[in-house]
Length: 412
Ligand SMILES: Nc1ncnc2c1ncn2[C@@H]1O[C@H](COP(=O)(O)OP(=O)(O)OP(=O)(O)O)[C@@H](O)[C@H]1O
Ligand SMILES: [Mg+2]
Image 1 (cartoon, protein in one colour):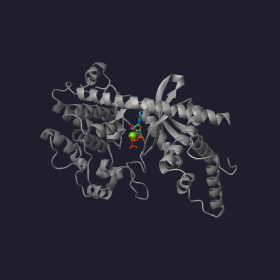
Image 2: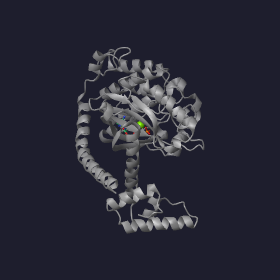
Image 3: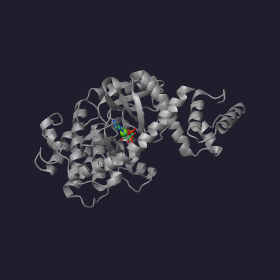
Image 4: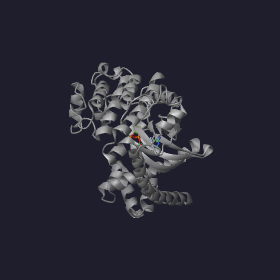
C-alpha cells in the first residue's frame, strides 16, 4: 500500500481490501488522489468521503470500516493500559462509544466508554471528568452502575464501568410501546432511590432519560452515566459555548437551557418524571415538535407533558405533572418526597413494586421483594433474550471476521 499513506489511512485501506469492499488498486488510486488534492491545497475531504465520492464505498460501509479501524486501534491501547480485551461495540451516544470488554486480571466483563476527543481536549475538562469519575466510583448502590476506572488509553480518555447484561429503557420502550403501571412505578421507585443516594452525597445526574436507565435481565433498574461530566460549564448542559444544542432537547429540563447554573437535584426529578411519563405512555415529551419548537416551548415555560394523559389515573397524572413542572420551585423538593409519592400510589410502603422501606437499596431482604419480576418484565427479558440469540450469531460472525483481520494484520 502507498508509502505516502498515514498509519490511519493504511489501516483503513487494509480493512477495505481484506473485507473485499474494494481492490488494492482502487484503494491505491484513492490514496493517490488524496495526495494530489493535498498538493493542490485541498485537504478538506477525509479518506472515507473520498471513497464515497469515488463511488467505491457507501457511507454505511465507510462508517463500518471506520468503526472497525477505531476498535482495532483501541484494542491495542486497551490491552496496554489495563489488560482489557475489547469484544464488541455496544453502542454510541453523545458522550462517546461504548464497548463490551473483558478484564482477565479480575475475570470479569466490563463496559468501556471512550470519550469523544473534543470533550477532553483541554486539561481542565479532563480534570473535571476525573473528579466526577472519582465521585461516581465512590458510590455503591444496587441501582447505580458502578464506575471502576477512568484514565487514558493511547491518546483517548475512557471510563470503565460494570457491564450490564440487559437493555436500556429506550430500547425496551421502542419495542413494547409502553409498560404497565406496576412495572413503571417499580422502575421509577428504584431510580428514585438511586437519586436519593446520589443526591445525599452531593452528586446530580443532569441527564436522566430512558436511555440512561438500564434494566438487567433479572428486572432491576440501574442508573447509567451518573456523574459523567456534561458538556460545558460547571452546571448542566447540552449547550456548547457557541450556543449549539447537542443531544435531545425533549428530555432537557427548562433550566438547562434558561439557567444552566441553576441546575440542581430538581433537574433530576424532572428527568425521572419525564422517564416515568415515557414508560407509562410509550411517548416522548413534545412528541410531534421540531427541535426549535421544543426549545421555544421550554424557554416559554410550557410543560413537556400534554394536559391529558389517556389511561393514567388522576393521582398518577398529578405526580408526573409535579415532577415535570417547568419551574423547579413547583416540583417535589427532593427525591425523598418523590419516593413517598410513588410509594403512596403503590400502596403501603415496602409492599408491591419495591420502592422498599426507608433507605432500602442496601437491604438484601427488601431487595428480594424488589426483584420480584412481574410478568411484563419477564416478557421483556424474554424479548431481550430472543434478540440476544440473534446477536450471538451476528456477534460470533463479527468476532471471527475481526480475528481474521487482526491475524492477517499481524502476519504482515
Ligand atoms: N455499563 C453498561 N453496560 C452495558 N451497556 C451499556 C453500559 N453503558 C451504556 N451501555 C449501552 O451502550 C449504548 C451507548 O450508551 P451511551 O451512554 O453512550 O449512549 P446513550 O445512553 O444512548 O446516550 P447518552 O449519550 O445520552 O447517554 C447504549 O445502548 C447503552 O444502553
Ligand atoms: Mg447513556
